[in-house]
Amino acid sequence: MMFVSRTAHLIVIVLVASLSAQTAELMLGDATLLRLRLQKNMTFRYDAETTTSQQMSVMGQDMTNDISYSVRISMAVADATLDRSSITCTFSDAKTSVSVRGVDENVPGMDTSMSLTQFDGAMMTMTLDPTAKIVSVDRGTNNEASSLFSSMRIMERINTVFPVNEVRVGDTWVRTVTDTIAAGQGDGTIFTTMNLKNTYRGVRDTLGFRCWLIETESTAFDQRGTISTNGIDLEVDGSGVFRSRTFVEAKTGMTVVTIGDVTSDTRMSVSGQQEMIIPVDTHLTFTVKRRIEKK
Image (cartoon, rainbow, N blue to C red):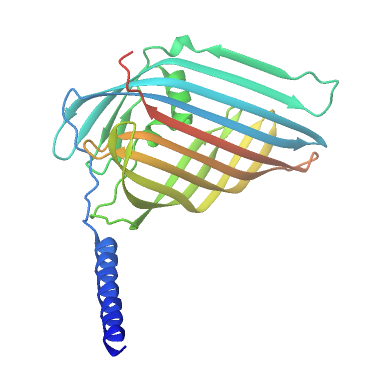
């Protein structure tokens, strides 16, 4: 009995030591330096789609609208050095659809879809540093196309900004992002400021690529701005949440697929004789996926 007891005790010690070693190895892991590694003439093709669903109430009337945009992007590395990469983007097959609904049955809804062929061939060039941070953007001569693709935040969603230092699984880094959106009608600007926490989740195989998985969520989300239209001033303020999962090709540092969503609760305050508050609930989803086929 004494021999059996000692043997069992020894087995427990060995198991504990083995598990401790494995846990320590798992926790430490190999440090990974997340970087762009591009070469001149490399090409990448993507499909991007953004869908926004919005609900609002104006003077007791509820209204919902859904707006979707999709576009294809062909990207070619025009130049690549140790500290800069220049990528030329060409857009094609842009499409949009709009659906508007009210609760009043006497007011007809509206459904519209169209191909935005006038944007075919529109070009934009972006320069990135090794951490994939956008250093500069040349939006080309098609201002209308530039405005649309900027509002879709395609460039920002194709690339994820990497940390300066190496990371291990579970490491995080935070950056502050400010989006500036001009009012669709009238004058004014809406600013959205987010603190985004990125977490490195390790290596995954996706669509035939060895990828780094990066998960992102907002720790702060603030909207502020003013819109003036038809002599009416609207003060905008709101809050929200941003989340995304991005699979980045380890070989090049370029995104393979990113999926995310943004929810926001916004209030538009109207002052003067028609003083009122208009609540707006918005849910935006976005997907950017690399095309593998050559067509």
